[in-house]
Length: 129
Image (cartoon, rainbow, N blue to C red; front, side, top):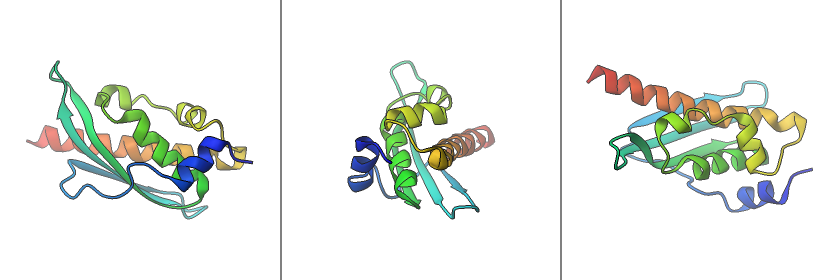
């Protein structure tokens, strides 16, 4: 049912927890399945002066697929620009973990939505400064 990558990320998730002084937090949930996810971002600058994801952590309450896709997402976007991270799709997350059963695709959507919400919160705070 699940790929080896999904099971490995579930058993050994990466970047789990909170960033106490996070620059932004995206909170999302799926009322149908009950999954909840918080995506914490710490933003820095690269050599070109672009905003990059310096650190990212997730706190996920959910099923195997929700935990795996949120963990995978952190590996995919850590160190990349906010612009590039904002273009991550559920398909890219699903491909990264070796695919998901059709009934679990919503977990990759949740992870991407959490990231996008955190990026939007960061940009909003930045505009207010």
